[in-house]
Length: 483
Image 1: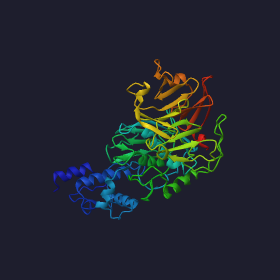
Image 2 (image 1 turned 120 degrees about the horizontal axis):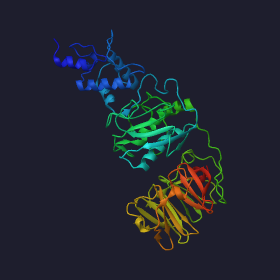
Image 3 (image 1 turned 180 degrees about the vertical axis):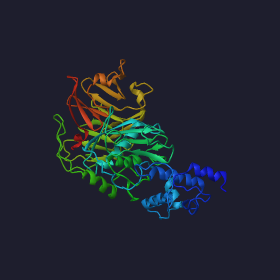
Image 4 (image 1 turned 120 degrees about the vertical axis):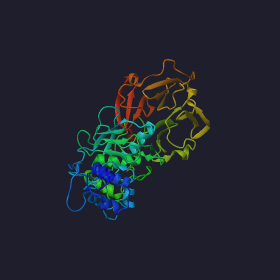
């Protein structure tokens, strides 16, 4: 006679079990405990149930259906195919992973869905509290870049409305029939190209997301999920980005492994060399067009800060900056530390007051000054400019030569600082949208050139005519460095 405990377990776990007093062979032979068995059952039902297969109990003759699923899973991950819950099998089942099932197709989804266009919009609709927004945006951008460097696909960031790829951090049951399970377990999931949810990418908000290794690296997971959003299923190659379990990838210099590149190019083809494009500058010397490297001329390139310094234009991005001047036949990035060792990386904003011969560089709540490329003294608090104490970061700054005013852009507002009187205007802040209509997103950088203000927002640069009070031209940000 069976004990009440065994009967209760049989009733609770009817899928793939024949209710007898003897435990399934997959369970006993593997020497797993009941907790492992529950974990395995949930894992196999979630990731190795084919489309249309219902999660209901059923009885079959011959091999236990759960053992069959274990074998399928072991085959996929290259484990010894025993059908048993051995140690190596349970280790894989317990590893943090993507939430897209592994069944049948390991490179392309059934039917090979793909986007019918090469220019795709994306938007981060909901953020996580474990990372600041700038770091989230940067990780998302780099995750998309991993795929755009190998394909003709271009990604354009949207700040409002619906985008092709809607990105959000969600908790538990969030309305798409694929609830998250809290810390670890399923980290994220994405939907294959298509209408409605197609391309949408969701991250479990319960995870500790990070730019490094103390938690789950957002770039690593985002790059993997965007592979799904573009039409790739999982790969059986452990070295592939599309392998389903989490393995940290360093974003700097990341290149798609061969398996992933082959898969995505089967859908979209490879990226061709960029065509020459006009810089859109007025009376500024043109840079002869070379065959630029892909990183420099990525179509989603954005800048953190832009400033004039002497007779050069400087463009800052992450750990690099570009110098553009008449004598240069090519524009190549240099490391920020090579010329500005105290800045290290990630300049938020910069401007030069040419009358004083001083340039200002802003990072977080501090700023540095330089004369030419020589740093002057220690960092100072940005409150020196009369900014309120709650302002801890400047998004962009631009010095207007004729009025001798410097504009600071912070979120949706801007401030005006009088360089002559050394004080902030009392009527500020003012709305950016009210004063500078037509700018398509948050302002990342700004610079005055030949009487026009150029606003850099994501991958676009807006030429603003202050007399007409309107945007008169829009070009790619990358065109400013010769792309």
